[in-house]
Amino acid sequence: MKILRIACMFGGFLSLVLSLSAQTFTTLRSFDGTDGSQVFPGLVQAANGDLYGATADGGANSNKGCVANCGTVFKITLAGKLTTLYSFCSESGCSDGAEPQATLVQDTNGNLYGTTFILGADSGGTVFKISPGGKLTTLYSFCSKSACGDGSNPGAALVQATNGDLYGTTLFGGSNACSCGTVFKIAPSGALTTLHSFDSTDGSGPEAALIQATDGNFYGTTSGGGVHASGTVFKITPAGKLTTLYSFCSQTNCPDGANPIAGLIQATDGNFYGTATQGGANGGGTVFKITPSGKLTTLHTFDGTDGFNPEATLVLATDENFYGTTCCGGADGDGTIFKITPSGKLTTLHTFDGTDGEFTAQALVQDSNGKFYGTAPDGGAAGDGTIFSLSVGLGPFVETQPTSGKVGSAVKILGTNLTGATSVTFNGTAALFKVVSASLITTNVPTGATTGTVEVKTPKGTLKSNVAFRVTK
Image (cartoon, rainbow, N blue to C red; front, side, top):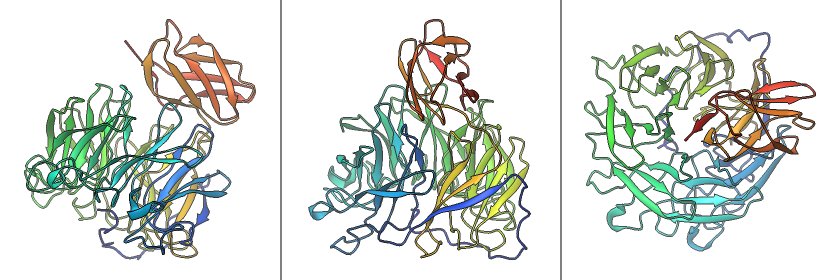
């Protein structure tokens, strides 16, 4: 699990990595415990333009009877003003859960959903809903069935599927004796269905969020299990039929990587890209590409100078390159931020030194202003973690929620400086729209629309969507 971190295997031994001229790194917030600590979850941009996240420890109840790490949910503006929305263990016996480790997700109705790793009514962690204003509702408590057959300890973010339900994984539990974890579906109302229980042969210990691909199926990773007990990549249908696509450490000494604890991302070429936390030619992890049929290509092997032990899912940016982090390595041994092209050329963008954070474990998020934002669970002024931004010169864009839908379905468009917008088009087809705020436009998929880029014309120029909107039937 991410709280019990993989030890950094490389110390600092290089001079500082050369900074790019167009690059600006800013520490927006250093946590001090009272406002949270151990910022393992990443950030999500909400429809109101602010960023939302969670901390796995600290908060108002950290010294008030919480039997373990408590944690918080917070909101932070792009200028760095933080508001604590909720402190876990606010309910008797911590029935609201504790220790959220996963990034939140915002649904099409504006609510945020997340998981807590421990506690809850049945002590196996929870799924919760929280409003942007901070009202929390516990939707499900894990380990409610005998021997935790419904799963236990969810450490990964949820994903909202095209059918409106949320899908996720638990690190432990399930119907098999190995307690190897599960894949589950949960309705926004809280009704949970266990879709698959891992048995080690098909994987064990899924730590990362699933991704719903363009074929409608979900793809993910397990940190252990598989043919070589070093983790897997799998596909699972919405009905729960699982196929193991790849077992890591298939090659002698694991040059193909081992123990992926990060999720996958699907690029415009249809392939999936991800990271393996360990293995590779130097033992420090890899970046890989894998086809939907399971053919894996190792794109990069970390050697310590460019980072070590990547634990975070990659993000595909508007320049068609991938951006990610390593928890360790780099000049000071505290981790790095990197860019990697689809062909595998890696550039180190920032090396953490402890004062600005260390041991980053979750994915970056590219805000609609073009900048990247992220969290570091440790380091900073008080050693309790940081929130940071990184600008590499990429311009603003718009993001749709959801990224697919039928003609007539409602769509939210998130962006920056949307006031005064004069047109919205779906792959060239005009749509009626309403400017709700400077960060939000509401619209519907227009008749005649086809799959392609959404464009919004504003007084400051035309903004394009970061991914193509897929029109479904």
